[in-house]
Image 1: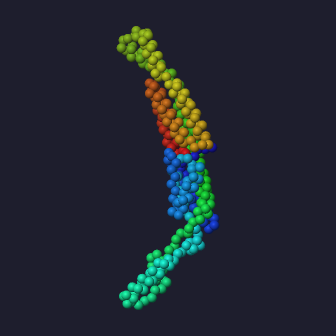
Image 2: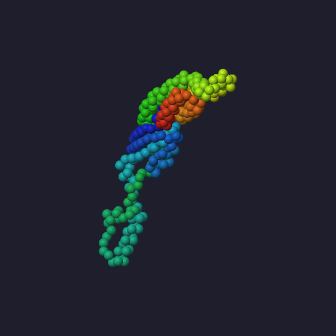
Image 3: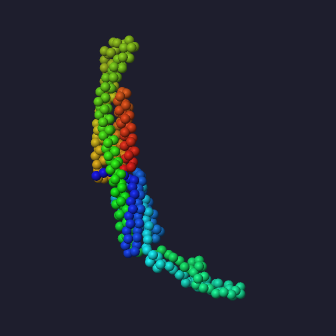
Length: 294
């Protein structure tokens, strides 16, 4: 099972009983789930059903839905309305004014239908249950196409993340190999500075031994490396999960950053710090990729 990207596009269309519904769905990165649905005003009562259908399948990202409805030409013709009351008022008023102004002329239907409000072409009154039956099909098809694209992109993200996590594992191995040299190097440098200062006898002093023991304790990174091993193992398992793991991977990356920062603060060795820097650079790339994962 591959990861799923939060970026994708899907289109679905369904026709039934002369009603055609077209749904276009697009998604971009977002830490939480944010649904935006563009619906005709007459169908806004269906929005909760649409959002519920999306929430069953998607947990993260900004999802935009653009839904259009076509009732067909026959339905549109049936919705042409003639306002008899308004037409009668026009006729009475115009005839009265014509008599008052002593004007000749007659009113015809051609003139009357051009007057404001006499003829209206209104959208048909929707049978919401019938519309939802068609719309649900279109939403499912759009969602299927949308998820297919997200899985395809997620598969590429999965391969990239797994390769980068393996690099983190290699960096930890390098750090573990270098760690024992930290105390040795400190002892050598300390002895060299004391010798240069003419304090050769201090090299045999018990205080020097205690200082080296304290330094070794302060520089011990075994616990941090053990936790890093565990975090890396869990992160690799998350990349194979069937669940949405974007948030979990983001949290795990933060935990790894905290541990490697501690390793860096304890490390007093140029080579070890070099491995730490490489680890953090790779981890930052992982964190950027995780922002694209549901």
